[in-house]
Amino acid sequence: MLGRDPENFLVAAAFFQYENVSRRHATVAVSDAGEATIRDEQSTNGTFINGDRVLPGTEARLRDGDSVRLAADVTAEVSLPHQGLDPAAFSPNGHEDRS
Image (cartoon, rainbow, N blue to C red; front, top):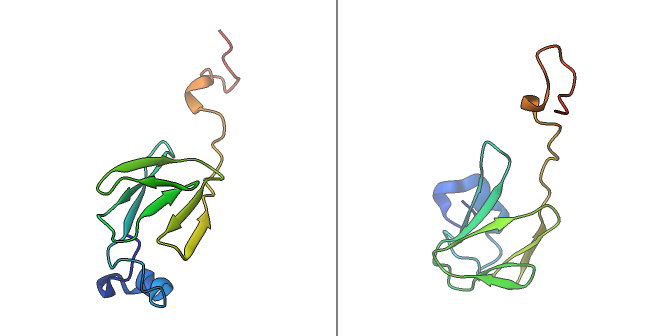
């Protein structure tokens, strides 16, 4: 959860000086497969990906290198871990299966 909600004191400390960031502004989630999303939590001043507004209450996919902005002042670049080869692509002897 990103925002100024004092219940999330570690995160809130990063946002306390930005009054235009809502207390519960947006939620970021990463799936087991490494896919990331951001959900605008009905924020007052909006959540943006690469300048496009995420509709309030909706979720949008994040990609490596995307620019995320909360309200007018808080901007960050998305950095996702790069996935290696899928272990399922290997045969039982440990070599890549190209069949």
